[in-house]
Image 1 (cartoon, rainbow, N blue to C red):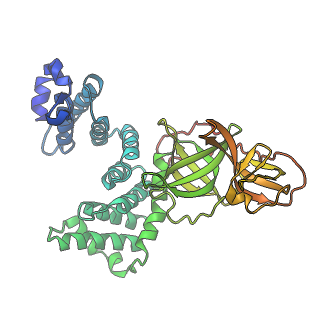
Image 2 (image 1 turned 45 degrees about the horizontal axis):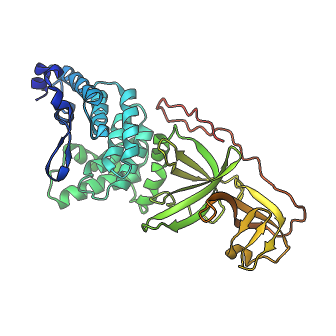
Image 3 (image 1 turned 90 degrees about the vertical axis):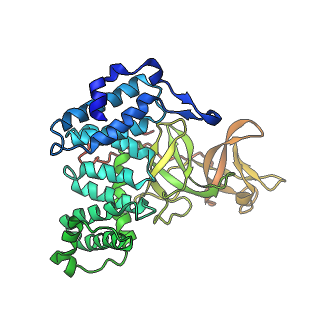
Length: 401
């Protein structure tokens, strides 16, 4: 197919081939150009010089066709075309371009193990430590081991080269167990791992998931290395109206308090946070709604240290709520205070639907013994925290507030 399309050239496509079309029930189908580009790319990736003397030429044409589709056609799923292009670039030795495209793809497919695996394969030679982290992440996101059997073997191969023989033994054994259970052929590459002296002498791994979680931490960091990171405080979890568990954090940006909310997913795994705990959040602001993508404990901070504070005299109202100047104190906090008591509060900017305006709301009582009446705010501006992208040429030039 790639040879035929190359012979015909991209000029053979008609104007209507660039358009999507409607099927039954008004379902939108991709254009002929998009479908052809994706399929040609898929086939070209598997071509080798051993079988095709013009393999590289066909792979370059496949990239040309993908670019043509992205530029000219009404594309439905551009991420898949870029995924094929990334794998083709890797085959042609253009590793940096391949890495950048795959990082963008993995951001959209974080729950799919094969996306992490694809990026790991590209980085195996240039950064084996990061590749190991990516394979570990692939193992953790693989819900059906039957589909991800190759991930375990690849993890084992890299782990043993980095002195992690227990992990290597566990993952090689997993790969063998999956194949044996399904009566699949045991490839020679896996047999080689199982028949080595280190496999015989290495101790069994008692806590594989914990080890994988630890190694995989760098995997999340690298795909978000261009995103800004902020000092923040954990403000708890809640369940949304559509029954989705959410987590929220408070921070101060450009002198304004900000509350960030994101789906929990795997963000809080193994963190064990309590209300107000200091953290560092990595935030993806590429879309209209900001999304928290990575959370790390901040051991140098204190509870509520990156949230606006308000110190003043508490005024209790008949409804059981109260105020400290213009700061609203909800019933659950007001019930812990006495009228006219001096108090220091952690406050957040929140929208009042009844008044249709923004206002300050207390979220925690910090100190009930303050005598001076003043607004206190720590210097919340932090220096830019740059994560080295571990051999991937990415620079974080975003400034935090």
